[in-house]
Image 1: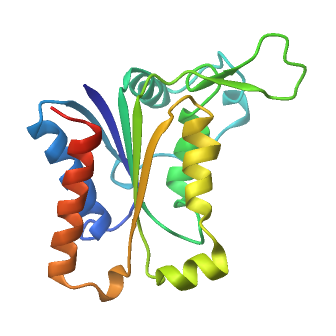
Image 2: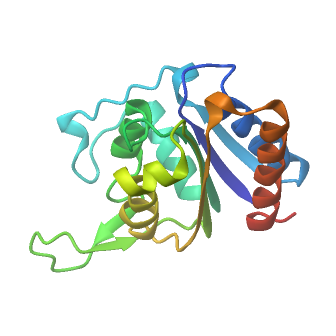
Length: 197
């Protein structure tokens, strides 16, 4: 199985990096082919330029490559922190430039501008692993769960990926090494469950 793994966190020593490394290692140990992107490390440009918006637009080779990989992927894993209830800008820009019309979705024939989408991704499953420094009760009571809506409803469901799982690890800043080890074990279990050998 081909699985795309995308990481959006600037610090190499972060728990997000540990999660991504665990995901990639677990997938490869199970014999899967992995397309891995550390967006910060690669210097990914998150800015969507006007000439890229339309279907069939000329795209830079790096964006073409990302589009090719997400089109071929049979599974997708996203790893990022919760910043202001959103992914970091580099990851939002990746979505803008890569999860695009003609690649991840198309509009129904005869659409008059309503934007009724048909998902094109062939990925069967998508996992999203997040980190937060806000306790769950406060986060849900004050902010709700915007990341669930963004990834599940606004992105993956719209693009045809119905099998979705998201996990928020918290509170990272005060977590112990034992807690982190348990969390990484949970990551391994979820990866193996959704992408079996």
